Length: 245
Image (tube, helix red, strand yellow):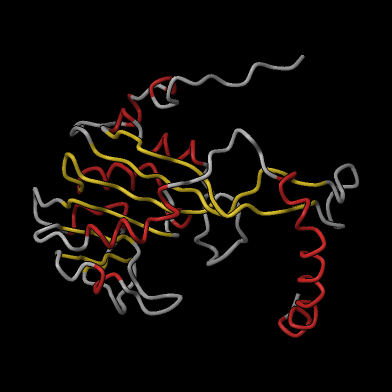
């Protein structure tokens, strides 16, 4: 849909949404946890920003959708903005897959956070290991990314993550303890008229725009190797659902 048609159709979509909103609850999936901590993550980060001497790293800090408040938020801490491209609010430019190579040996942070970036990492499992290297033992990690979202910033739009996917990336095997993982911003969806006739117009339930992880690094894993990690060790004691037939 071009911009002109989108503008003309917007009142129609709003009216349809108002009519449909009483049924929105039927699109939720009961086994998907809703993020609680991330609903207040701004307040949490602000409280940390008042701590003198705290070292904070934001991955994906460049101002893209508007002015960043992070430097002001962490005025009492030591804030470092990291991004793939130079720009406003970026102190270190580099590739997250080699994150540790841009800092001095042994240099680490008390808090690392990243918002709307993991979907753009070509090898998120590699980025996870690099983040672990840069986080102090006892340090805090906050990740917010997408579970269901429109394609954007192609061709670098690689993955979408469930809460379980983030738990796997930052699992006990890598030295993390998950405090909370969940999803946010429920969406209402259906298959379009362009879909295969067998599913055309069918409702799609369990859609959530956001996926979040909040955890703490509890130990170092200096020799970590994904090739040596078993699936059982990263799925938090869960099993694949038993077949119905």
